[in-house]
Amino acid sequence: MSDALIDKLRRRFDPLAASGMYEVFQFHFTDADDHYLVVDDGRLEIHEGEHDKPSVSLNMSSATLKGVLSGEINGMNAFMTGRLKATGNVMLATRLTRLFADYKDSER
Image (cartoon, rainbow, N blue to C red):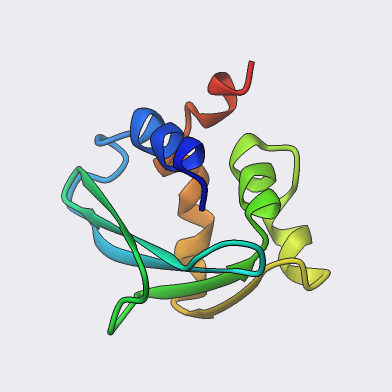
């Protein structure tokens, strides 16, 4: 995950959407180092590497993540076509766009 993408995620994180939530989103990228996001009651931490017990693990390219978060790629379509693979609590992946709702606005 590039530093620019990490910075963008931090800036666009919506703490209200994460209120009362404790989840770990593990990202295994095909073209970048692994990272995980810890969402803890309105707070976000981004770490490089692998978490011992993620809530959900997502495998994709960094471009697919950017596309899903910006709305250019439909997450369900990416999942059904194999561009995105998920294990664990797969339904959590659908919450990413709400947690980073302003992400699309940062692309302009």
